[in-house]
Length: 394
Image (tube, rainbow, N blue to C red; front, top):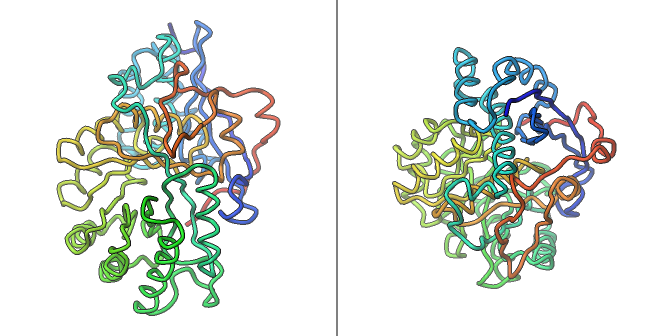
């Protein structure tokens, strides 16, 4: 079997599946389709489609010469050859994001040829089911609106949810505005309201969104917020600081009993190794549309497991192949504890997923479709034509 073509399909869709997420939210997706002389096609996804979709086609064109004619079932060899071609300028970052989507499509082909879901090719199921948490984006003002948001997720069957620090629509007109005391009091009031509304059995997590922030919190602020809410049984505190502040992550981890999570924007094993060696994380959060693909994500999972760290895969910007690739690795990884799901993106997700995501008691069962379990129809391409200008800028 040989690769005969590699294509990029850019789509733009409203993220309207969650009425509490953000008004008029629209984002783009970059799918990478690999065709073979056996008629088997694989589909992958790169996070670059969410942040900078126009750059994806020329970068895939750059890699095309080293992909055409290769055996897609030798996904590791194909990935290494492509990575070597951009070694001088792409050891981490955007090039690796693109390779994530390419490699993902190869695994999709491999699973289809074998007639097995991808997790079976990764060693089989480590879990029969995994808890799916609703990733809710911004908290809302007043806090009663955030409570409404939580009840909406529970009504859909979720038993776990995550909301951000700060509030959207606050009279101070800034997400994190105010003194440290004001911020701590506000986070305390918000999570007290949430815990009081949903009870003690629902998992609540907090997302700091500080990794790409223009004015990120210093460790002192993150510590104060964590200590101000830790008695409310917070499942984890995600992205509390900028990723250049590994020492701050390590300090926060020492100063709070809330598990500290991070890694959504890290690429390649070495970037995670730096955090793990610094004792900066309790929970690693690779995203397979970012980190380098399924094999690199599995290496991160295994490295974390060897250090007795948990994993909760990040899927924030993924709408189809990227979402399912993360889910397949999750089911194959013993240290994976939960899976993220951004309900807002469900319009396009429903179009791309062969099997719908069905919750039972807050849990998702392992996929059964060979490959990743995704397909792209001509009707979907027509329904969600690419619209420039909807990328996210931080």
